Length: 196
Image (cartoon, helix red, strand yellow):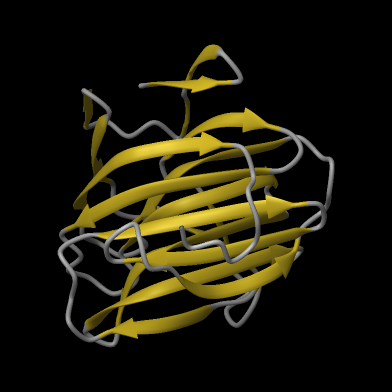
């Protein structure tokens, strides 16, 4: 998969490349291996940093979007977008399976992780995610149609530091699962909360 960024074609890079994945016409399909996660310290003391992550490098302000559809079955199966400086500084958002249902999830990690969720009782077949970086702020939004957006969270994130931005998934338990990403894009920042 390649992206057009500032007039240049940029290839995406894997971190923790899974054994089973395919890419065709802008669609990435991944079998997420069991025993993978991104989490740091809070609640359990655990540090997990080994989920599949397909990314490009960016600096400054930008907007990233993707649509995801997964077969979430086991507790904490999740997939979505991640912005990352290093193992101690990252934000992930996506659908996470917990309490028997899909949830729009956000985890902000700066030395230690936190977690917030918005239940999706209708179990949407797919969902759009948008992550906007502007100066020292990252805003997370989701949409069911790529038109009407709902803000999940704004969080502090260090400004003007090179980051990796891309598609992330994890299966912390004993079962793998499949997820499809499409319409992944990284483009110019417009304005926080702009749903057009």
